[in-house]
Length: 147
Image (cartoon, rainbow, N blue to C red; front, side, top):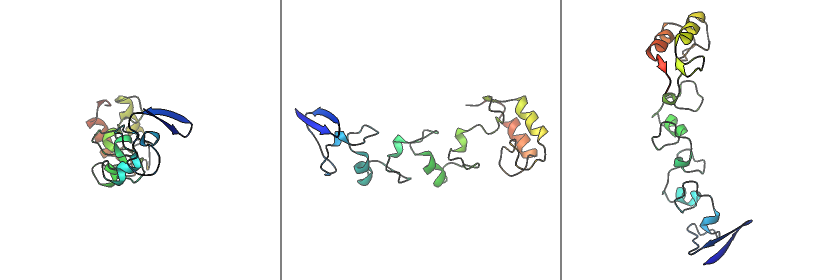
């Protein structure tokens, strides 16, 4: 057993490793995915991906559609769309739930009707700039609870 000092932390390790050779024991460095390798080194040698070059492995970042890739990377490579530009893949959102009640229902339909032909209204669920037939059909087509 060897006592390893990590800033203000003290740990005990059977085999202190320093995979990245930076002079700091690996168990003292960020390892968000728990694979035993410092994140920056695992990214550098290709053990994990970091498609948005944030310094954090993709497996440790938001992945709402659970496909193993960070949401921003899904959007950037075209795997997912983001019509409203909020950084969240569209398939993870319920756009037609205009009143954010958790389901697409008559209240959302009434919002579309009340905003008919309005430019930039909240009922413009397809983000084409105007509340119209396309939005009405989208609400009807997505009727029911959001998942």
